[in-house]
Structure formats: C-alpha cells, structure tokens
Image 1: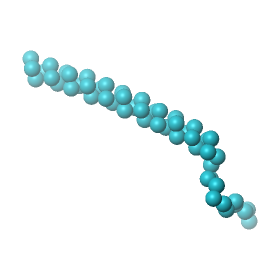
Image 2: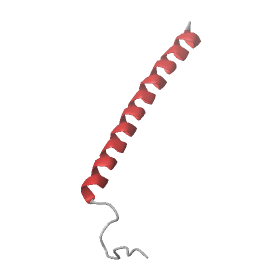
Image 3: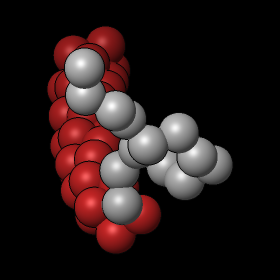
Image 4: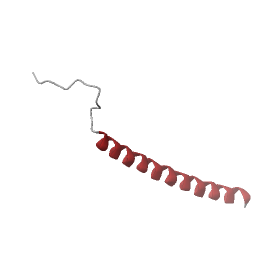
Length: 52
C-alpha cells in the first residue's frame, strides 16, 4: 500500500496554488467588467426606449 505524507504542509505547492488563484481571479474580474458594460449598454437602450 502506498504511503502518503501526513504533515501540516499543503497538498499543493504554494507557488502552483497562487498561480491558479491569480488566473481565476483575473478571469472573474474580466467577466465582471464585461457584465457591467453589457448591463450599462442595456440600461442605456432601455432609457432611450422609455424617454422617446
């Protein structure tokens, strides 16, 4: 049976964990900015329809 290290250390090296976390948060930021821009455009179109 294979032995697994049992210690206080993380399962993944911290450098790999940090890199994947940074990529994930960056993609989330891009998605949120894109969603915000789309929401503002749609809100502007709705305002034009209501006012005119």
